Length: 433
Image (cartoon, rainbow, N blue to C red):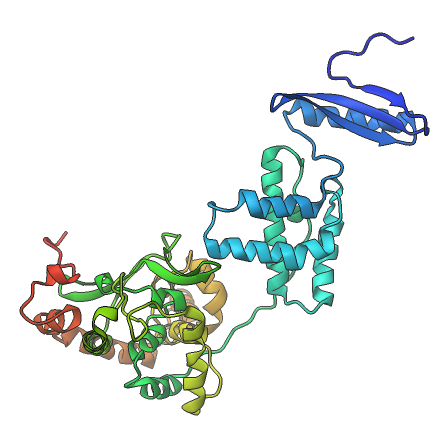
């Protein structure tokens, strides 16, 4: 008869049906004694499984229960762990990914049996069902985040979603309006109730939610320049339309407004004041939003986005989405040789690498100038100056020479003449710092 087992070494016995059972002590949890039980057809296999568990337990980890499935874990993760840690919109995206993309393929698999091959199989299944590479990437990213939390909780020793090879995304260069098409679009929206919103989408490259989240207090006069703070966005979630803060430093930005854009906003302000007078007490614009319904309430982002294709079609431009207006803004800026850093800042990209990955193919002139610079250094040949540089310099000089009447601007943009700008939501800095 063998010696007495030490504490935590577990116990092994055979049931009447011949199956061998092994149990190992996990200590106290929630006021109760906890054990991990394994089973196998032979005693040797049970011993091996218990030995495999010892390193995990000695590191303070609690193995996932044998009967816990991927679907059970992910459903609890979406319901109990995610709320409050991400935006409501992101929470809905995770829930949809779990419900529609992950659980149909992996839901019945036990969590502690999940392997990289299962994740690869899920991606293949999604492809067979006709889903795009972007959808496959989102499904894998959602699973990877959920399993990372399981790692942190100590119920998994590795994240198989990180190990599995991710889907390869086809690079899509996207479409952008040409300068001529952009002018046709601007002419088509002239006089439209939301003309300023469409002009902002094209000239500043703001996202749909960022445009609809703008308020009049976001417009400032700083050092004789009119600037726009982009700090919030309007989103639709399960509870309705919500105004939320932008979550990253890169997405919160300050943009300069050109004189034509200021004039468009002046007309928008005058129209909104007229609408408020007509509506009277029914007017409801709690956040002083620039773009609202005809009674002052926030616009629905989805409905607003659907107006752009119709406007473009009626103007003879074909089908264009509101996001393609943002893409066009970036493309036109790069065509005018605006530095990529400035383009990234204007679009609110997390890093310049994002901008380069998406729009790098639009920079042939930069690559040509690099080649010319090296030719000059190595062979003493003069650098050819691009014709567009002269045109750009002339354009910038013209803009620099324009003198805006900011007193007139303040009166028309933020309120009625004769009132103090500070009481009307226009921020005027007290000093030049």
